[in-house]
Amino acid sequence: MIGQGAGIAIIGSGSAAPAQVLDNNNLAQLVETSDEWIKTRTGIGKRHLANPLTSLSELSVQAAQKAIAMAGIAAFDLDLIILATSTPDDLFGSASKIQGLLGATKAVAFDLTAACSGFVFGLITASQFIRTGVYQNVLVIGADVLSRWVDWSDRGTCVLFGDGAGAVVCQATQEGDRLLGFEMFSDGSQNSSLNLAYQGQPKTLNEEVAIASGTYQPVTMNGKEVYRFAVEKVPEVIEKALYNANLVVEDVDWLILHQANQRIIDAVASRLKVPAHKVISNLAEYGNTSAASIPLALDEAIAQGKIKAGDTIAISGFGAGLTWGAAIFKWGK
Ligand code: UT7
Image 1 (tube, helix red, strand yellow):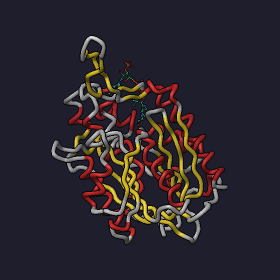
Image 2 (image 1 turned 120 degrees about the vertical axis):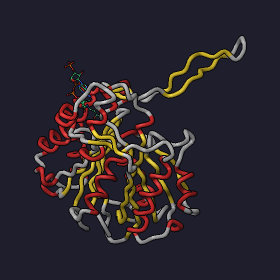
Image 3 (image 1 turned 90 degrees about the vertical axis):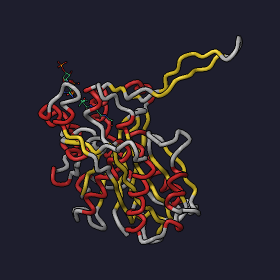
């Protein structure tokens, strides 16, 4: 894919996870499950959970500050902040709060909701503003605190999720576009497979006017359907993004999928014929952190020295909506 204006370089990353940890054995005290079941069916060993005083904005700011520092810019240099989340502190959005906490006074900030595809969609959205020459420095955050929205008595969902945040800084460059290809999809006909839906009861305001009054209900999921969807659509969307990038699977140095289930990661890697040593996974430590999972895994792999400047990375997010997408990029300046 050829950029029309500036190219995009992804030059800073950061992440944050709450210190509090709940392992599978702890969880087995809450619901009828076992460490063995969770590990063999999902690959998850533990999850980090935000305590009652920790906000999504705080976790996001911690991740963002590290990404900004690695990029070698100041918060003031940011032109745009995109917060991909389904669990804002405030339904009106949390991006502006984060902008304020960072002191990114020049930046416009907004939330983007695309569940576990949120970070991929956010990165692609950011790239459009850079390619058109509108903005120079864009911060993309993926963050979620789904622990606040799962039913902790439902073993079908509560064992899966954890909290966290990850962020990247994208910068305009004239030295080649590092976002090599992408592709995104939605399928609303399968919307009921995974929801965190508002449910209200009718409330009569007067004889002629009634409204709904209620709140959002905990996550509901048809695990088998989402599993089938992911294993079918994720390899496809990565292949499409690679085609757009004029690359083949062998060109990919690292595969980072949304961290939902190790069996999904393994099945996708095997379909694409990506060898295990190129596949990044941190599910065992964090579980599924929704929009945070890809930037969290990316940041850890960079910090561990696995991912190096110039490496070609394929990322793919998938989840509620249903939504799914992939992006192929070269990391670093
Ligand atoms: O980011 C959002 C994207 N979400 C996903 O990607 C989720 C995709 N789906 C999955 O990862 C898997 O479907 C799950 C991990 C959710 C479930 O794994 P599964 O292999 O599809 O299990 P299942 O739902 O078919 O359940 C198998 C059995 C059932 O018992 P019976 O009916 O065979 O007696 C469940 O009741 O396992 C039981 N079960 C559990 N047992 C112990 C379900 N959850 C648990 C549990 N502990 N936590």
